[in-house]
Image (cartoon, each protein chain N blue to C red):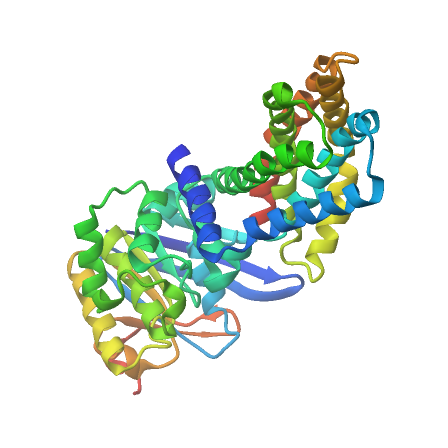
Length: 221
Length: 221
């Protein structure tokens, strides 16, 4: 079953690289957001240290919405989602495959986005880059896990991108606040990131344990 | 190879009843064809037999096992092809078959996959993305999965649609070989002429009711 989930994720990532659709859209969007913020604020160093955590997470959130809006795009053609649901697999395995694929693309964006943010905002925190990426990844697990479930819920709706954002944003707020605080603690050494990381862990566990069941219930007819 | 027993099966879409007490028993090696007008319930019945929908009332046993108790086991024994081909357009035929095999925990070699593509008459297009295929080519590729899986039960919803006469002859040969190996087929068709080459027993479906079986030679052409 792990192999099946991996193959579903592989199919999505390969498909995206061939179509050059989702990943490139996410990257362009991320860069555009950063440039707009950089031009709008032009912060000095101390301001940048306060801004960067929130800015990073806001960019990750909006960029991930671009990716999540397309997570079931390949399945829309030729009834491919039905083909997946007819495979002799628990439907939760399909959820994990879609989640891993979206997670892989989002993490690729973050690997690009984070150093670019430090450069654009002139933040000298290269020694903390692994820790910042670690916090981002930890929070992205839950963000994409929740996002894939909501993408499944909204895929048949007419204004699905709008509906997805309306549903995801309020549900992701606690995770985002914890992510911003943990990132700020890592970046500035003011306070400990661990209480916030524990909060992120709780959300990750809640979302990732409940989402496969909810997905299986959603796709039953 | 597969024993299918359906008793008093009912299904409705909202308040609209579509299947009104279907009784059907199909033994190993039989071919049953459902004829009927659009909206008569053929596709709904096939999708229930494929575990895509749960019946509202009644029982469905496959090889003596109650299907709703273990739909994954049932899906491992059957193959369903509806109106959609369930193919991924960004993948080549070989990649689609490989992906399909992985979902079913099969490990065919590349040579075996190529052989299946050759038998489908698509060898020249084996490395081309499916998005460039016509509807008939996609249907052939989708049907060729039967050669890969050798399911105990084959469920087909108008498999001859989109096929030219050469394709229909190919399909009939495929199904006759499958039946000769002990496979069981339940399919829907609009036209007795198109399935005339098959040794089938026909049923007429009207308004969600399945009429008595009629041997193929007694159905008017």
